[in-house]
Image 1 (tube, rainbow, N blue to C red):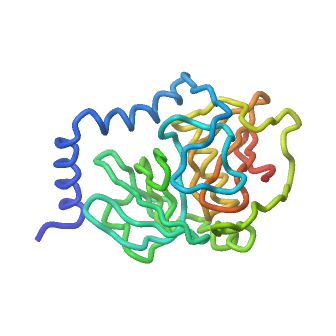
Image 2: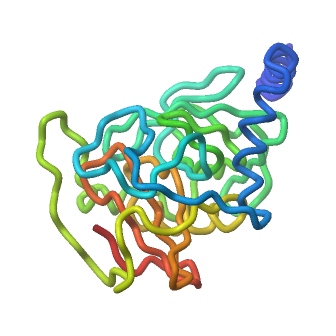
Length: 236
């Protein structure tokens, strides 16, 4: 009998042949900003799979960008798995032949991702779908302790107006440049460790060198601020 990892690898390989350069274009778009070429942010409405009150218009991007999410594995298939965050957001995670796995702090395989496990996923976010670069099973911070501070999204509910910590004095909604690769991954991990529940759909470097991590799928927070040492310093 084939193992889940082998079966998944075969399925992923077949999919890659079918879609050809399309998949490469998506992954490549996420990787290139991290090599030094950043995408200029605009003030247009944000691209997301769900309209989030108060979440549009900030550091918008025209396509997929580096980000991630954390939660509990809700289903598993040969090509990926479903993820349910502590705020009730449903995420589709796509795995590829280059996806890396960890369990705790040790290397693992795709077979370690099973229904009911707590995972942290980082990669390329496109609305509520993440093409995984890295999957960490049972991360040190599962996000369960933050479920009471993150305000879940509810259709028709007004956006929560709340600010905590320090917001960069020079910050202006829509400012900054989108970053990718390792920089975005570090900022995403820091933000999700402090405020798990939504989906990080982009990371923006601000003029003072700090980062704004943009989260969708929750009523609050939408903007999580991370300093140069990748420590969360504020949110709104």
